[in-house]
Image (cartoon, rainbow, N blue to C red; front, side, top):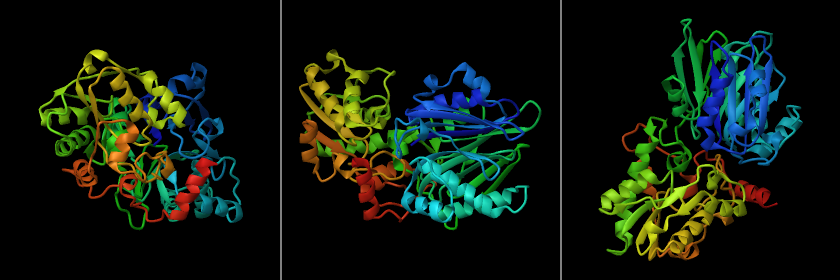
Length: 486
């Protein structure tokens, strides 16, 4: 669930990439990096641990020269979260020189690692699957070119072979020294990527590619469209756009969790407004709440800020209940779901949220959250509501029970960590300490997100256990769990 951005401009792009990463900060807080390229092919790279505002100093920005660049904010799903060596972008010096950032998660890393070492004779220095991806791209690009010059068709042929070798989810942006910017999306379009353009003062077009549409809109770019699943786009140093479908059988199945939690509500992904999708999730959740909770058991509806607010507003409206804000959020603490380690998540909940006793005392409260994953945050919040004086606490999730690992770019690798795995809903309610617990139905989630769009399917693997790439095996899931627990 990282945030990525790439830009081809007519002037320096360092500040605009920095500004874009600030807008994408919600997608990852472990580390960040920016790379820029001068016309002569010289790369400038700065990366560091921590959030964007902490990582880059004035001297760093001055060193990031060039009219072409890319940036990344990292949410760790592979490798070591606290290691600066795992921070992106990654660089290889041949062919030409390539710098790459990646959002997603590769699911055949064992096979690729073996192939790169024994067949491709390429060296890996980290456990990051992004380093794997840039080396696969470099190898296939090297195999495609015979001379010095590089054409867009050769780049697209290399991406086609990348698609045949790589499994899992990946939205990637790369700089090729002296040639331009490449972006491509996996054949299922699991992770988002959108392209936009604007007319510069000199009459030429500038381009940007990013994880979310809000980056384009806030930077004055006109949204062109989402990259298609399996598609690659290449913007050369003259600002000319080249596009090609590079996958054999592309099928759009975007990640449902983007709409539930990951994306900002002011983004539009695959033609679907995230905010409106969350309103529709609330509409359907209200019906389920009415079905499974006793009449008169709820006095007031409260969201767990911020991503559940649209759903909670719709629940209150449809059920004819009062909507109140009972929790005050400290915005200087990171998102608990994407923090590594149960102990860190638990500690951060009370640092992040404060329950206002005046809103809870003597009331039967319905708390709405976007999802329940490990249950650590939910359990703490329910106890906070009781400590603030709530008579009873009903807890509702705008997403269905998370019963299966998510292997496409969200850190849910172990079934044993998931509070819903192997438990019935009454058992989960007891574990969390809720009087009543209500989940969104799986089909309601699907219908709410897809309503009114041209998208026909979603990756909902963490809810229904169906892995859309068709390559995720029980052996792989066991291996992932073993590496996380070791």
